Length: 265
Image 1 (spheres, rainbow, N blue to C red):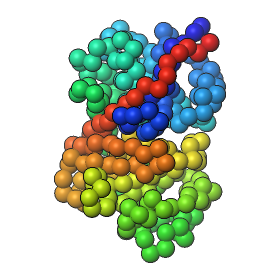
Image 2: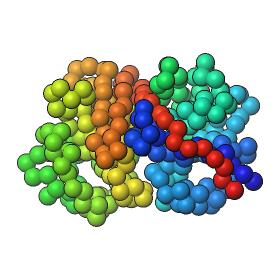
Image 3: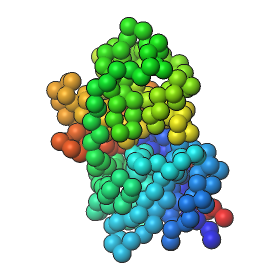
Image 4: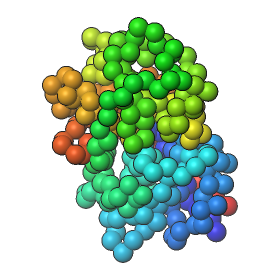
């Protein structure tokens, strides 16, 4: 069975920026082992699998990193919506619903941007985990955890950018990933910055992380006193995300760019 596939750079309006995701459009579900093998073979942060439903605006969606199935992935959801419109499966006139392990997620088109509607994942204050306590001496402003992340706020965007990750120490926290964040520098065009490291899910550093905004967005909305935010992810590839917390939901918007299309044999 040949599987149509699109390679999409999410949260970027140019190729080779943001975060790459592979989007596989299936006629019927594949077994889990095959999906994991494809994700391992492709070797990028996430591979998404779409399955149609009786509703032409709704799809089953699952995400796999090279190592494990992921419960919630923003950039591969944005990439999936983009691939469906670019491939002509949908025309973009109506919002899409994706049925996932994290419940129904929605994506709406607004010109050349796509906004995702995700559940908020608020931060519970807690000390920096023991394995990380020597990583940022004198620079930690706040810390905590969420359902997915160890959450650490540093004193400056420069400290976030300069961090050389100790992946062994990050993995030793037991959390799926570390979310490192700070207020953006004045004049940068952003409200906050972040980086995400996930050695426990097979991703040393994630280039652009939509799901991280489910925690960082509400945190910074509270800290800054506004609810329309711009986030810069300071990975090597770079990414811009537009974040709109709204009670127990978070809107996460951005651009996407198709890099290649083809078929898996």
